[in-house]
Length: 456
Ligand code: ADP
Ligand code: MG
Image 1: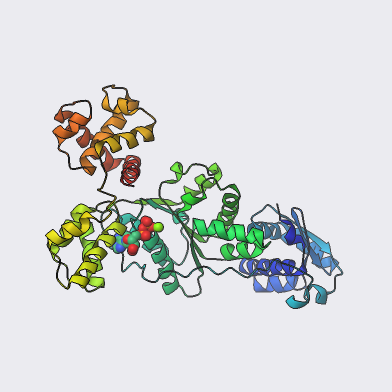
Image 2: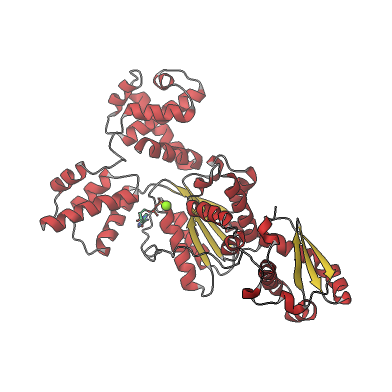
C-alpha cells in the first residue's frame, strides 16, 4: 500500500535511504557499514518492493546474501508496510542520485518532521499530588520517564480514567521528565484528535513521508485520549503501523484513554491486543484527603490564603474531577480578589451554588436508574422490580450503590425509589458492591464510567 507519490521524485528515495542508513548504522558495525554500503542507493520504489542499486557486482552479491532481509525489515518498519528489498547492479552515476535537493524534479514529499505543540511545562511530577487513587499510575509514569532503556513489560504504557483526573498532566509529566533527564531523546506528545488531523492534512498535501518521519523517529510517543480514534479506519491503520514501527525499535509508547482497551470498541482487535501488551493502569477519583491535598497545593502555588473550612467545603462538594476542584477554587479566588475579603464557608456555598458542578447537580436517583439500565441494556422497570436473575439483580445493586454514593438520600429514602424496598436491602447492596470493588478492578472501572455518565 505504498502511496503513489512515493514513487515520484528522487528526493523521496534519498530521504528513505538516509533513514535506512541511520538504522543500519545502529545495527551493524562501522567497518561493516563502510565496507559494504558506501555507494548503495535506492534505485526505485515499486509496489511492495524497494530496489537498491549497487555499482559493483561483487558487492551486490554479498549484500544480497547477507543483508537483503535486514534491508527489507528496516524499510518495512520505516514505511509501516511489509516491503521486500531487492538488490540490483546499477550503473546510475553516483552524482545523479546524490544530487542536491533543489535540483530534483517536482516532488511533494520530504522527511522533515511536522511541528508539534510543545509540552506544557507546568505539568510535571512535582506539581502532581499523589494519593491512593493515582499512586500506581504516578509510580509507573515516573519509572518509565526515568529509565534510560525501555522495559518491554512497560511498553506500551496504557493509562485510563475518567475526565479531569490527571491523565494529560501525567503524560506530559513523562515527556517533561524525559527531556530533562535524557538529553537528545525525542519526545512527541499529541492528542489522538491531533493525530487524526495531521494525518488527514498529510494525505491532502501528499506528504505522508513527513507525517511518518514525525512519529517514527521519536524515542517516546505520547498519544492522549486514544478513544477518539474509534471508528476512524484509515487513521487507525496508520496508527497501527506507527505503533509497530516504534515498538519494534523498542521505543516507548504511552497511551491514555477514558476507558480500558477492552472497552474501546470499533478498533481492530490486533490494535486492541497490542494495547494490552504492556502495562495498563487506571486513575480513580481522589478520596477526600487527596482532594484536600490537591486544593492545598493549588493554594500554595498561587499564594492564596483560603481557610481550611472552605477547602473542606469544596472537597466535600466536588468529588469526581480534579479539574472541577480547580474550577471551584478559581471561583473562590476570583471573589476574594474582587471583594478583597477572605471567603468564609457561607460565601463559598453561595458562590459554588451557581457553580456548574456537574458531579453533584442534577443527579437524581431516576437519572442513575436510567443510566444503569442503558448501560446494561435492561429496562428501568427491571431495576425497580424484584427479579433475582443475575443479569438484572447485579445492575440493580449497582444502581442502589450509586444512589447512595451520588445523592444525599438516606437508605430508607432510596428504598422508596426501588419499588419500596426495605432499607436493609439497599444497605446490603451498598456494602456488597463496595466490598467487591476493593478487589475487582473491572467493576471499579465500570462504576467510574457510570459515575461519569451520570454526572455529565
Ligand atoms: P484528564 O486528562 O484526565 O482529563 P487533566 O490531566 O487535564 O485530566 O487534569 C485536569 C486538571 O487537574 C489539570 O489542570 C491538572 O493539572 C489537574 N490535576 C489532575 N490531577 C492532579 C493531581 N493529582 N495533582 C495536581 N493536579 C492535578
Ligand atoms: Mg486529558
